[in-house]
Image (cartoon, rainbow, N blue to C red):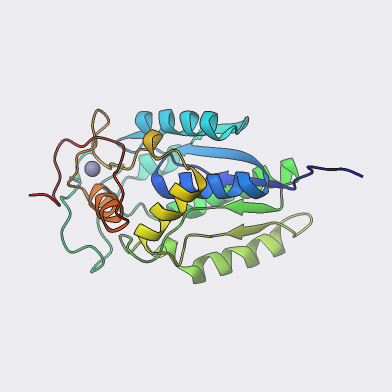
Length: 230
Ligand SMILES: [Zn+2]
């Protein structure tokens, strides 16, 4: 009898808190490989560093860190275009903000599906969050349902499935889940605009700070300033 066998999964790991929790979940249940995609975003070096450190801590040995040149070349987002400033957080959830990177997650998912086919993995984990998020259209459940149809129709075996375990959770619930799983939040990077210290005032920092506060937990990373405390 084979004991300890785990089926394989691929996790998309940006290095942020949601994908870190997602990776901790994946490694609990699957032999996990992690993929990271730099796309010319402002904080790409810092996020890539987090990717490798989180992989180390979670014992993920199979790693793929690659570059997507298309998104940066096109621009059109505050994350990839120096001419568009990253806004300080205000009114999260009203409009699709300028930090939206056009159809970004489809690029990421396509890479993950290709790699899953190569590895024989049947699950792809992505830490998309719908609630308490910035309102990006590629974080909606319907989008992932549709993408799964594409995978069934367009892969050799048709047996790979994207799973989005965090999509219906509130952000503070994700913090609690991560703490239960021992997710290495201290190694993660969420800030959109700085690489030395998290700014504390962009949408991503504000959502993260608020999540830890609501979870009654301390965020282990340090911030330049905090919009919540001012
Ligand atoms: Zn920030």
